[in-house]
Image (cartoon, rainbow over all chains, first blue to last red; front, side):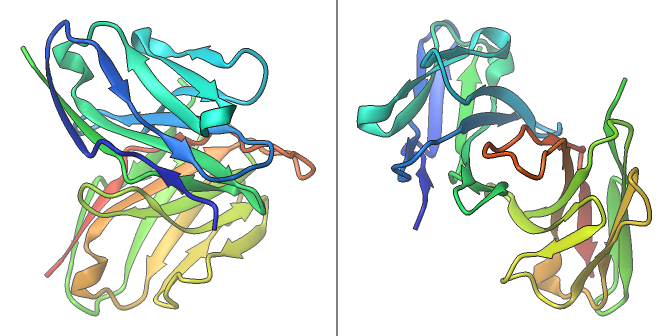
Length: 114
Length: 117
């Protein structure tokens, strides 16, 4: 079955540290990938997405992600995190049989210490 | 600003007492979704509407129903809430084309937190 996996469930960093959150997907066909972020007490919002083209995708707030087809990965990166990046991060991909249904990773809780 | 609005933000109900959560959107999107999200978990899709077409997930309990009277509004009815239904309920929208091969970005509301006593 199609799946999305996130390996880091809880990450704690200090401000200015670099961030990389792992996301792997299982589907072998054409794939679209999303990173969503949920700040404390706020709604889920899109951080960035990959549909096609340049595998290095830039999103809001200095985040980027690289689609590596050979590794089935779409890892999220930020060179220098801030306290305000404390949030829950979800990787997701549309179900191949029903692209309105997202397959979600379990999420990564990021805490950035000031 | 165009947005997805959910009311109320917090809802307390009694075990077995029907409750309705509402969602409205000013994005004029044709697809509306209802998700259930429990603490520190990913959202779980309950059902979605593509225009007026209702699409239920196979594992959504019969206790959960939905109505979409028009493009802008969608309701989630929980007929007999149990303690296990306490969760955050998220509404989302997207603009989809029926022949689209891609998943579209979903826009989420702030959620309604349901507490069942």
